[in-house]
Image (tube, rainbow, N blue to C red):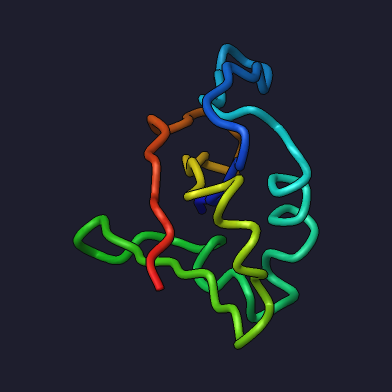
Length: 102
């Protein structure tokens, strides 16, 4: 199983234990993803299993007005990385920057 995490503030390193380093800075967005993944429709595909080809997809679903336009002045995008979570955290991917597009 994988878990996708995000950060508004950029690349870490954040040690997770067992020698695994998450390449993200833990911030309020990271905590929001952890709190809502699996229980809200906002973070679709952020927790799951890879398909037979080793692929998966994820998306952030935000309705009209849920992301204020002013936020884009301060945060033009987010950094994301994924970690394995079952049976244990034993891998973290590289971080990638995803720019906002509207």
